Each structure stands twice: as C-alpha cells, then as structure tokens.
Amino acid sequence: MTRLATVDDTREFGRRLATILRAGDLVLLSGPLGAGKTALAQGLGAGLAVQGDITSPTFVIARVHRGALPMVHADAYRLGDRPDPRLEIDDLDLDASADDAVTVVEWGEGLAEHLNEDYLLVRIDRGENDDTRVIDLEPHGGDWAARLEKL
Ligand SMILES: Nc1ncnc2c1ncn2[C@@H]1O[C@H](COP(=O)(O)OP(=O)(O)O)[C@@H](O)[C@H]1O
Ligand SMILES: [Mg+2]
Image 1 (cartoon, protein in one colour):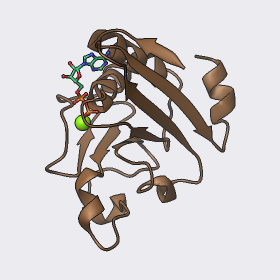
Image 2 (cartoon, rainbow, N blue to C red; image 1 turned 180 degrees about the vertical axis):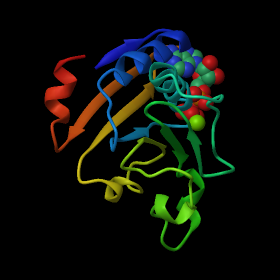
Image 3 (cartoon, protein in one colour; image 1 turned 60 degrees about the horizontal axis):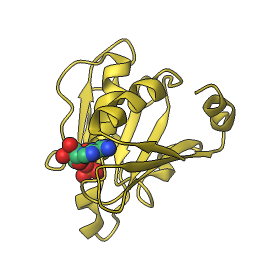
C-alpha cells in the first residue's frame, strides 16, 4: 500500500514500476473514474520510453506505443455493455503482438485476466478529500511477487 500525494507522484510510481516489466507482461489497472489509471499508464510509458502521448484510449479501445519494449495501452471501460465484454486484444488487429509488448489495461479487472496466465493487478483508490491516491499491487501467478520485492 503506497500513498501518492500528487499526480506527479503517481507518474513517478509508474516509472519505477516500469523497471520490473518485460515482454509479454499483462498489467491491469483498476479504480474509479479519475483515480489516476491513465496517469499511472503515462508513468509506465515514460519508464519504458515509448513513443506517443499516452491519453485515455476510451474511444479506440487500444493503442500501440512503439519502443524497445512496446506498450499496448487498452481501456476496457466501454466493453462492459457488450454481451461478451471480455477484451480480445488479438481481435483488435493491432500492429503488435502481446508476446513482444507490455499490455496495460485500464478497467481491466474482470475483463482482461484471460489474456495471460499471470498478471499484475494495480488498484488505485482516491483519498477522502485531497488529491492523495492509495495504490496497491496484487501479484497473480508467475514470478510477480518476487519481482515486486525488487521495487
Ligand atoms: N495523486 C494523484 N494521482 C493521480 N491523479 C491525480 C492525483 N491527484 C490528482 N490527480 C488528478 O486526477 C485525475 C486522474 O485522471 P486519470 O489518470 O485520467 O484517471 P482515470 O484514468 O483513472 O480515469 C487527473 O486529472 C489528475 O491530475
Ligand atoms: Mg483513464
């Protein structure tokens, strides 16, 4: 559990988290609207040094950001209305393979776990009345728990 007082702290947290990421990783971001999921994704993108501005991909579902380790940034929010709302990255015909990239999914909890056997769930919550956010990292399978200890 980490407290992040400002949006810059959240971006910095993303930069640090990026240091333990590698090709094929799946990172799910959960938390209410305005929690800071996109801000965290911006920090991840900065840490990975990928190209292009990272903005909320709500209207395109997913975007590929090129780099030595590319980042697929997806937003599952609108998928919730569909009969089968699960995110299928392969169906999006992206110019990237999930095996070669880090895949980061906003609103991914409950909709994107099936994309990988192992994943990291990042929960972000708003504080009571200031800008503080509380972030919690939940390892699921693989060596995620060991990798988190290196943070
Ligand atoms: N500590 C903080 N961490 C992240 N965002 C913060 C923080 N304090 C204030 N904010 C603001 O909250 C908003 C978070 O927006 P965004 O990252 O788009 O959220 P989400 O993608 O979860 O809907 C931004 O306007 C940001 O400036
Ligand atoms: Mg967002």
